Image (cartoon, rainbow, N blue to C red; front, top):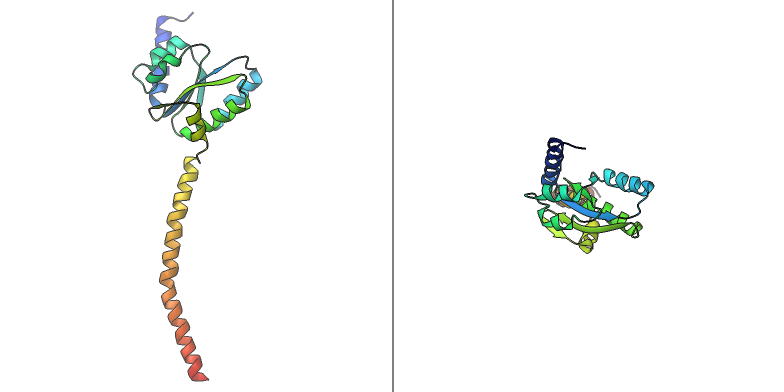
Length: 174
């Protein structure tokens, strides 16, 4: 049995994780096999997400004063928490994908993205968005394409002048 000091240490560690989370999803599961649990954990790890099954009382206490406080009433029954400090889209994609593939054993409770509580349909909407890296690459492509067009327009003037000079010299030579 844990001492009061060990319990307080666990509470502080969980509260720190909750404070640092940019996005969080609370999920529930029933009759999950070890293989399915390992599959879920692997998918979440690849997305850069921490995932843990929590004790509800401990989680409610840890949520106090953190961004997860509005979700504290959802810590009932079997509860697991998936936390992301970076990309909420990756977390949403991983949870949505696993939830659709395993609806009989895996249930989404509630989510939190950048301080806003969200439902399952909003998670699916977020999951359909491109990742942050994809969006950045699209913006950079758009910026680069404009620069390339400007270079083509600027270089067209001397090129066209050279063509005209050549045509004039060809017509005088003939």
